[in-house]
Length: 121
Image: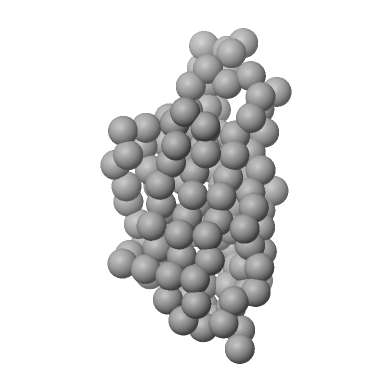
């Protein structure tokens, strides 16, 4: 069984920084793309950033230049460094990964349960 667990959310003032982490665990054969999504109250879930296994990254226009996604393939983790946070960045942030489990020949998308980020003075 594969699990994704996020950590690092919390309350931060506008202009501040926060670092989110996500660890994948369980019977993992390989992990392809890893990503962060977010969902603010009353809004649809949106893609924040993605990173491939060879560390090619992509960002939503709204966070490019402020957020940095990275991963550690040896530890099966993905991190989102968020700087210069704005009130509109407040949301539940979800980790997402395309994973092939040990008992499968196919990959599937797994989601974490989310971590809340609040940006307020």
